[in-house]
Amino acid sequence: QVQLVESGGGLVQAGGSLRLSCAASGRAFSYYAMGWFRQAPGKEREFVAAISWSGGNTYYADSVKGRFTISRDNAKNTVYLQMNDLKPEDTAVYSCVVDRNIAVVASIPAYWGQGTQVTVSS
Image (cartoon, rainbow, N blue to C red; front, side):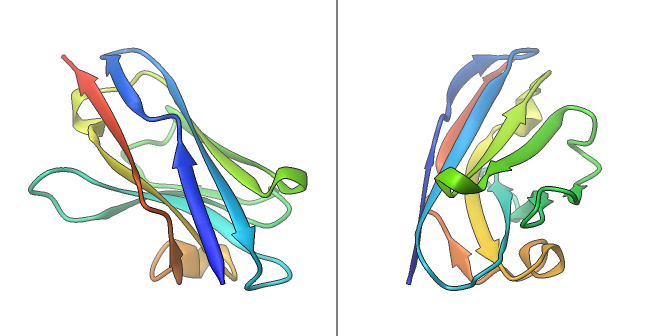
């Protein structure tokens, strides 16, 4: 019903920046929120950021607040995650998610992408 494809991951030095993209295809909802989770090796999956349909509301994990910015382009069915001042602890597989609203996206989103690897060297 919904396919999410992430891109933009890679290897970057601490203090550097990356921008992740996630393109959605198919249709599950007329209006939907999107967001990002991440999972580091040996760690539990954690919520990163979410954005409402209009882009007017955003929500960030405390660990990334002030460094990461989530945005979206509905004409392209795409959500972005601009990551600045990256730290080694940001190293993880980042997955794009979609569901009805920010609350659900941040907790138990229905649809997940395959993930893209972000590696930050010290």
